Image (cartoon, rainbow, N blue to C red):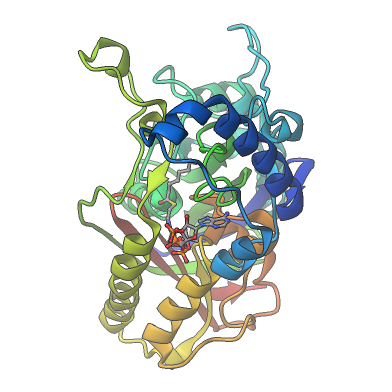
Length: 375
Ligand code: CO8
């Protein structure tokens, strides 16, 4: 059997960070303005007054304290509530390609490779900045990599789904050194106008280097013992933004063409699905949950992660077993579980095993079981 290994990871964290208090202050002002502008309809009963956000609710409901964003000024401007991003010409590197470069450099340095060694790039993200040409191909050109590149989108599971695609490419021989890149600019596709959604997301980019064990030179290596993906259709997390929008007979409400969800339903339906998925995956690999030293879970909600890990282990894990990064990063969609892996793995001993697991819109669930083999 061809053994595939993760030989490096990289992380780009934007400079701007926004605390819950700052976010709540700006949305409170925007809510008061909106209610004043719609006072007559609210009085007539044709519109409901918007409720201002409550800072304490955010941490209690989600475990989030702050988030990083590509542009703080625009998000916090109560008259705008979205980032201010420059419009770039075709000759300039696009913003989504640009944010990947520091993370690529870090990941390749760990792997002991140069960009010319890379012969496949998969960009997986919840929101890709344009339909084509692929951002992955733009990155390939920018770093001087060879081979092939493409973009894919499986929402929050884009990293694990693209890791499985990379593993399959390495096993089949269609690639030798694959970069999986997850550049998430969630702030440009979040709804900062509504208190239910404004606090959930943050921006970041992760990169993972995968190759065959026989080619690897990195001082730290993680064997991929197995990958398992699953999907089940649900409308509970949805974003109808797309090229059809402008041709539709009935123009959509602007709130439909950004992120929206039924958070409670997602919570109730996804937690048992993910616990069962991980248990099944471990069983297939003839591993007991107790043999897993660490769970690098998707970072959407702290209670959700505790419930999922409890469904696997039979008890609530501590933060060394299931590390938390969403307190400072919030939900960075596909990047979340890889950020957790990137920041919390060096203390594991050789032979120790862990599970990288994502879950999100689709629904989609992906798990990658890894073992530290070198380092
Ligand atoms: N301040 C005060 N009150 C609030 C606030 C706030 N900020 N937000 C909500 N409330 C209110 C609600 O309005 C509601 O009031 P009422 O009862 O009067 O209607 C009340 O609090 C309770 O609301 P909820 O039931 O929604 O609260 P929960 O306790 O369920 O917490 C959560 C909400 C945190 C959203 C929780 O349900 C959750 O985390 N669910 C799981 C979410 C999840 O994992 N989603 C995955 C989505 S990500 C993904 O798959 C990829 C998409 C990525 C796209 C990125 C683009 C941006």
